[in-house]
Amino acid sequence: MNSYVQKVINDVKERNPNEPEFIQAVEELLTSISPVIDQHPEYEKADLLHRMTEPERMFTFRVTWTDDNGQVHTNRGWRCQFNGAVGPYKGGLRFQKNVNDSVIKFLGFEQTFKNALTGLPIGGGKGGSDFDPSGRSDAEIMRFCQSYMTALYRYIGPDTDVPAGDMGVGEREVGYLFGQYRRLKANFENGVITGKNPVYGGSLIRPEATGYGAVYYLCEVLKHEKDTIKGKRIGVSGYGNVAWGIMKKAAQLGARVTYISGPDGYIHDEEGVVTEEKLDYILEMRRTDPMHCRSYAEKFNCEFVEGEKFWGVKDVDIYMPAATQNDVDINSARKIAQSGVKYYIEVANMPTTNEALNYLASQTGIIVAPSKAVNAGGVGVSALEMSQNSERLPWTAQDVDDQLKRMMVNIHEVSVTAAKGYGLGYNLIAGANIAGFMKIAEAMMAQGIF
Ligand code: 2IT
Image (cartoon, rainbow, N blue to C red; front, side):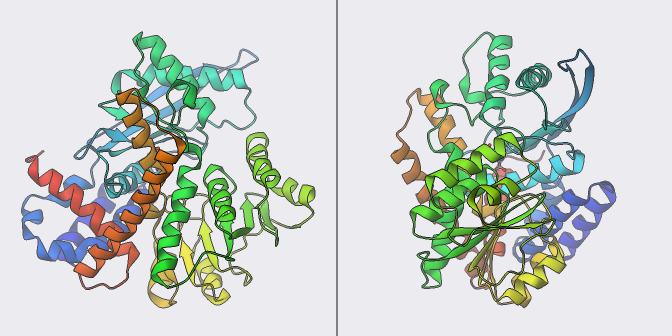
């Protein structure tokens, strides 16, 4: 490995000792762009890698709110404005108990390169809170969101930093957050946040975009392998918004999602989550009980395996981890390799440990696609939402979907080209990392030293 890359990885470890997820994301990216640094000594002179691994700005704030019984609670809020070299900071808010500095920082780092890959002018950011929304009433969620936005609104804006949803933040939360922003600023800047209801400026297809984009990207991989999506069985971990989009698009294209999973176990539905009734139930199950998917098996009379993950089952053609970070470790990866599956398409942000990812990509013959490329359609359509807001003209669903498809074809294409340019063959991980990195690197180099 390049010695400057090695030094920066060591320094990041030393500087961020309690941030394993952040270190993991940095190590993954820097390892893969090492050949680029070999060819660009000017990047070391400009100390580009230390600069790129330190957020431009990151802050925490207190979020106090009152529950329905009059009890006051105090949570911590975060916003990480990681890199603004190619556009206003852009990235979601995650409301989940396990959110901490490391999680926010890794997500902001990943977001920077993902957003660069979309080809649209958006920098990288992320935020959230350790607030646990489960079991909270609508009124509690509203008060929490209002308090959160009261602390944040001075530091964001349509040309500054544009949050969106992530885990625990959907259209309802985005609505409360935007309402409070509008109230505090006494204006209508709906480009300040994406993932809105279309009735006040949200984009059509945004709810589906991450999942649809992932399937469009998958189609490009299959095309490259002279294969087709028709008839394919897909195992998707998770059953959130992203997994739902995958199920819907897979069904439209003649494939089917036959395994899904939740924190409580996994479901095997050999017929696939393909009917409108089943797809609607996925959304309802998510809304009413985000921790359990068992009820799907009861309702549709299929197998439920309690407390297990499905990695390793042999009756699928494609694995798509779409739950959360580090869902697949080396043990799961070994089972996946033994299953004989040919495609491993990451969807959630950093769903695979580095050990597992390296193993799958280099020792198994499985084609591995990285999340920062595969899930970029979500934030890509968020950028299209920003365009619609600034032109004050909503686009049709067809317009958005066409752009999304083109974006995913392009992300695959630039990744393939970038990897080939460094003699790495059909390496989608290195390709995505190199292509995203080069865009950020060139923008930073052009803007002087800071
Ligand atoms: O991880 C992600 O890309 C998101 N949560 C979406 C971010 C966005 O700004 O739409």
